[in-house]
Image (tube, rainbow over all chains, first blue to last red):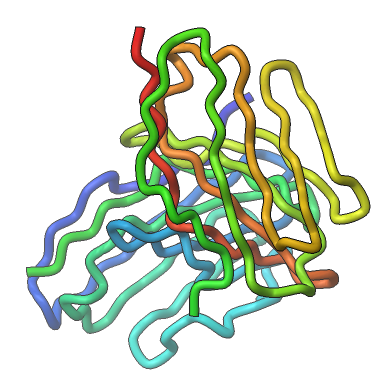
Amino acid sequence: EAGVAQSPRYKIIEKRQSVAFWCNPISGHATLYWYQQILGQGPKLLIQFQNNGVVDDSQLPKDRFSAERLKGVDSTLKIQPAKLEDSAVYLCASSYLISYEQYFGPGTRLTVT
Amino acid sequence: DQQVKQNSPSLSVQEGRISILNCDYTNSMFDYFLWYKKYPAEGPTFLISISSIKDKNEDGRFTVFLNKSAKHLSLHIVPSQPGDSAVYFCAASVPGANNLFFGTGTRLTVIP
């Protein structure tokens, strides 16, 4: 069974630029999560989708972050404009329905200079 | 506000000995707890979990203990193996919510 796929793996941008991350969850997993992991901290949930609907986006900085999950499968997370404090690893996870046992992708390491 | 805390950033253990990783939480509403293991350049992988109605859950070499009165849980690995060297995250969730609150992680090094 293929795991959660994410791309790119690494991205370096300058502040005020925009960036997008892509995630393809495990086949059949209806729930998709985006987490932000800042160096030295644990992952923090940004947004959760159930199929193509948003379940929780209370921690998403909506003035600069946006996410969508068209057709209930792939998802993209966008940051526009980026700030220095957005430097982090962005993890995508998926689960069968709503489950505490989430399967994580390898993450995208973003560096904002 | 960090609701899940792992106060030991690192731990070194000899191969074959027991590894004990600790986690404390502040939110008494948490009812489900998980441990994730993370290797470099990979995402966290689920290891073991425990519901608040239990005080122990065992899976092979891994055992998680929950002390609700102390708001403390621990992960025991016996015997420790070099392949267990990784960062271990404790996570917790409240009833009806789907998001996990993670600790800051403990880096375990098992010395051959």
